[in-house]
Length: 468
Image (cartoon, rainbow, N blue to C red; front, side):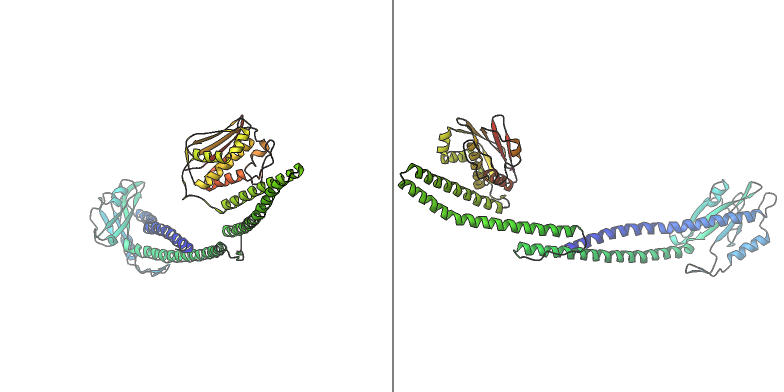
């Protein structure tokens, strides 16, 4: 699945969840809010009618005068023909009844409950106790649409409670407003979701288009093509990534060209060097003059040194082309490699009367590159070691340590000691190629490890860490 499609699906899921939560919350609050508004209106109307009824009271009792009865009956029969925000109201739905101080109904706008005892209903019962009285009652207990909301107000005369007036509003009269509110919410909520979905689709298409443009550029670079760098308007992360990929491509091309040139140059130089060395060795056998013999020795020495440098350059170039060595690791015995190195450096060790001490241990690594790293560490230790000292090789866990006794590394050189072509002069010797420790550091990186070089009280210690 493409990135744009994933973004769109993820965006739509989040939008759907948020939309569902909001609409569910709003729908859940729509009906209570409408009922609360209707209840507030009924409270105002009930208190208004309570004062009108109280004005006709006599001797501390409610008097339902013919004029009041006629007025309330005419009110119940009115046809308002009102247009309330697009909803027609053609009749009065409010039910009005008045009770005395004992809860007996004195007046009923429907004319059915006069004389009955309503003291058990909460609206009357609570109001007679001096509290706010209200109730909701269903005429059919199984049908929620038959519910009627009643709100009561106390009727007082000279400060005394002489009765209660209650106003009832049926749920069917409120339901059209609730349904209209829910319908509007569905329509506008759906339109909002649709607009957000379209915007999300446009955003996903825009991002996908930019990412695909960058992907095609990266694939072309990976296939050794030379495409033009992608051009993006504006400045964002994708533009920065494209610039970074372009910069990386140029650096990799320059590095690859340099490596190819070095490889070609070293290969081309090996044959002439071999010829020069061979010619020098032949001349050395024929020359008898000591002065000339010194020149032929110098030719042979320098050709050997150049040949060694070319070998190191080739090895370094091969290492730099590798990315990692995760599938070629094995347990390598360090003591066996040290013995092999001693045999190959026998004359040098004998000349400086050096000893080598190594403990038994193994490292999990790629055998050939570990051998190259160990040989370079030992060569470096031997080159700077004092005569009649011991080079110590210690293996523990995933760490290989090579320690010698000799001059310490100056502080200014510690940070640069593993740089390519950086070297320090050994006592009585020429500068080296400066590639040995650089190769060891590269091998450590290929293994996911590190090379640490530091001074000890008596010399230098190199720690090759290769995590398992």
